[in-house]
Image (cartoon, rainbow, N blue to C red; front, side, top):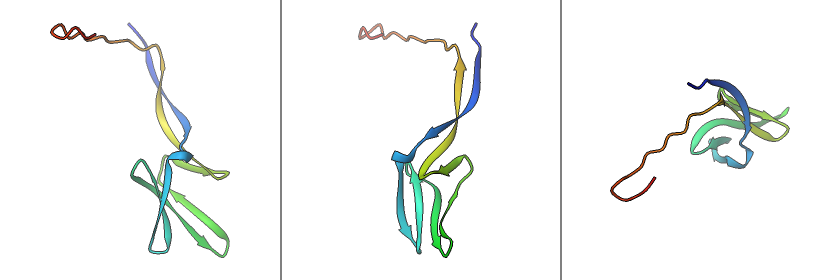
Amino acid sequence: MFKLAFEKKRLEITDRVTGKFLEGQLHLYANDEQIGRMTSGPNGSQVELKEGYEHESNRFYQMADTTTGQTQQYVDCDDENGWC
């Protein structure tokens, strides 16, 4: 038997974030999913992100569930074609 646990991990996703100007705002996307928007005003740029995403020091992060502990390996062999 194996023990599997989940923990939140902060993953940097800066290189996957893209932007698209719509209605005077920069809408932010990660993997084709809108994650927030950036607006510009008298106090500078403001970034608003969906829950689970963060912006810090010009970098974007996603909070993701990751597994910890041992994992069990599964092997499925295809007897007809000889693949394992």
